[in-house]
Length: 539
Ligand SMILES: NC(=O)C1=CN([C@@H]2O[C@H](COP(=O)(O)OP(=O)(O)OC[C@H]3O[C@@H](n4cnc5c(N)ncnc54)[C@H](OP(=O)(O)O)[C@@H]3O)[C@@H](O)[C@H]2O)[C@@H](O)CC1
Ligand SMILES: Nc1ncnc2c1ncn2[C@@H]1O[C@H](COP(=O)(O)OP(=O)(O)O)[C@@H](O)[C@H]1O
Ligand SMILES: [K+]
Image (cartoon, rainbow, N blue to C red; front, side, top):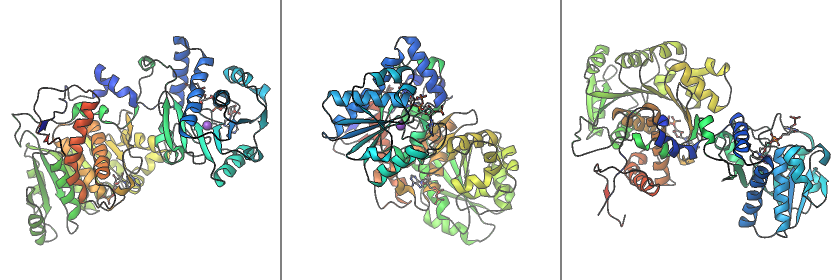
């Protein structure tokens, strides 16, 4: 048997601020256009000139092509800005390696400026006009038309050429972003799907947000010599989800742990839909809540208690006959986390229960029906959120609750989640293939490990239960939300195809083992605290 430990939480406050934690997180930072312009400026001030930067950006494109494909005719499509400059560099390196390369340019050579003009001058071959005809004879297409400087939807020769390349299933390699993809948001203004995208220094939000995520193909980040010290001036507020962001805050066991010290989770159990709350309770227990209780709604049927009691074992049941019973139950301060929504039913009863829960001051997760119950008066909900709270809407629930917020903010997923978190005062998990976790103070995390097998009834209930289980143990809410989304995705990946929601809680123990190994591999600090995670090396 091999004994593993997982890291000890040094603190419970926002770990993004700690010095050591910060350096672990920086590899996962996502940078927008404004931040990248500043990164560029600082890198040049640091001593790497703009011509070298462009050389460093274009060369990995050529290298990636030569590493992945055998010799074949390449056409490099160059735009009028620096993205086009990167294309000229890539073309030169491919040609120097004796690859058959042609270049087609949007506009004319004399319109190029700065480093792009310099690198174009180093290209000895002919420069053709960018039209669909230029595609003839090419097998690989390098798309270096527009990157961060995209200002409007694609049209004319660019749109036609990319459309013909896509229709002919030519392999496209994008420089920075597929041209037409908005790097800050993932919105598509005319891009076509690429096989490979190479970007510089850090990923951009648009690489991870749909539809951008689906257009990029394989995503490679090139090191172009930018010093990490740029982050001193540009503190990142957006990250790709990764255990390095929150593992320091994961609840830990030690020899002195007992079930009460691990916290007591309470899930509202509605009627007649009981499976949703039961599954949520199970996943709260699986991620370590010491005790988990389902508060059973007895107001509609005396059968409710028997259904819950007969189908739950380690999870306890508590009948709630009148609304006051819930308020009395919540006076028990050993209860450290609440969840309502899965199977709760939409209407005034759920509204009242939500408000009672929020009033108790306990950390609360609101999902599904708990959110939709406030669709006609969201401000009643937002006003009541005064303590730690996590909302877990899917797109439908989000639109119902946050319609007014969204109308007055950007329409991309990152902006919408941020605006919703700010308006509600809660951590918002806006779910989907590209789940965004946003905090009221503007921090945001984009998740990337969720497989589409999660598109199955009840998987959202389990996510809410995982969030609850982590919060119940005292985990900081933003980190608990991000950790829960990651664990949820990892559990689904661990199961593979054929997944139904019931399978997920049973995969969580294996995911914790994987996580412990991952932490060890990434040389995280390990405390002497003993963990109960033990496993045979043969597993
Ligand atoms: N930051 C870094 O660290 C590094 C960045 N590098 C590279 O620089 C790239 C950013 O370069 P960039 O700023 O020159 O912008 P870019 O994307 O080439 O386009 C601007 C031109 O396109 C035009 N244009 C835009 N949209 C259009 C449309 N729909 N249809 C037609 N025209 C349109 C626009 O014209 P305008 O809107 O002004 O009329 C302007 O002329 C970045 O993505 C990366 O590849 C590396 O070299 C080094 C390290
Ligand atoms: N195509 C997908 N790829 C990755 N994750 C998905 C996909 N579709 C759904 N999910 C995830 O599955 C869960 C579904 O939640 P939800 O829509 O609330 O389902 P339910 O109400 O049936 O529980 C969310 O965590 C969501 O992010
Ligand atoms: K591009």
